[in-house]
Image 1: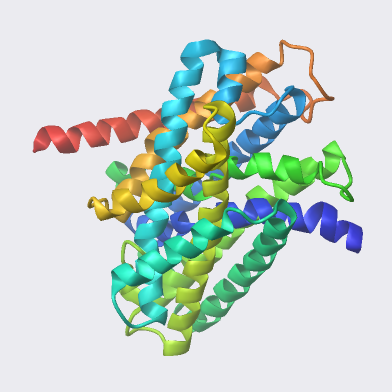
Image 2: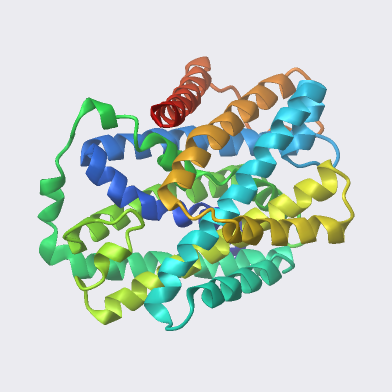
Amino acid sequence: MLAWYKNFFLPAGLLAGTVIGAGMFALPWLFQRAGFGVGMAALALGAGAYLFIHLAYADLIVRSPGEHRFAGYAKLYLGRAGFWVASVVAIFEMVSVLTIYLIISVSFANLLFPGDSLVKLLVFWALASLAMFLPLKRLALTEFLLTGGKIAIILGILAFGIPNASRILDVGFFTEWQTVLLPLGPALFALSGRVAIPSVVAYFREKGVVHSRKALASAIIAGTLIPAVVYILLVIAITSLSRSVSDDSVTGLIGNIPPLALIGVGALGLMSIWSAYVLVGVDTKNLLRYDFKFFPGVAAMITISAPVILYLAGFHNFIGLVSFVGGIFLAIEGLLVIAMWWSAKRFTPHHPPLLGKIPLIATAAALLLFTVVAMNEIFQYALVHWLR
């Protein structure tokens, strides 16, 4: 049992804890807008795509010599042009993601604590920033415990919603063609855990952990698929509890559920975004340190300060940022991971590769999905601004 705990549950929890973050709170509103069937299809497509991306990125790390992060692998396999594209995408994406976590932290903190919203945001930011310096094994244990807590709270919220579960039927399977692609970008955002993959791979290099490709693959598969199941339960719970689902899933619950359930939602939200914030911050810090050769202190200072500066500068639109980051930055990131992984296959691997042969149709399907999502988000963004 101890071996399962160390070699499966902890690393799977490390990935799942990063994936289960702020993005899931955009899903209930989007499911209602696009239809429950369309939302489920978007979630299934996103889970399949990220199962491939997470395994491919882990394979890239395992087979490559040296210590790199996202931009460093792009330089290694896609050249200087790939390095700069990956650098811009990774930095803007991760800083935007951290800003999104700060935005939604206020909504959840308001359910638990009275007082000034800015003070609560700064407390959350300070605690999450400090946790970026925890040792990897302690971080893995923390993520595992928090993931268990998140699932328990969602099940508790679901129990409150069961008497009103018939509200899901009111959502409908499909609403209109204009909203078919609406949930795809946010679904990618909600399921993305690429930033945690280096930590998961590094965990399997720790003393006392089985150095097994099969164990690594199993942890990544579980850490990717568990969040998708959790999201379905959350959508059912929020839809059952809210007479009118709000865009952040929180505001619409106030007055509709008992205070104890509201406290559970607040705790779930803060745990989810705190754990994800820490892992994204660690990867951002390491990217600046290893790929850009910044001094560790400078890398940490940029990672810690950039999100709160953006928030204070007025970036507060939760759904807008989730759609933009998921639809553009994460879609481009997915395309880059596939390109790097495909290019790396031409080289003699540094260690035995994690992935065997992947059907060409699976690679083509992932490429098509990320391309469609990126083009749709760019089109929608351009359309909105041209209409202005």
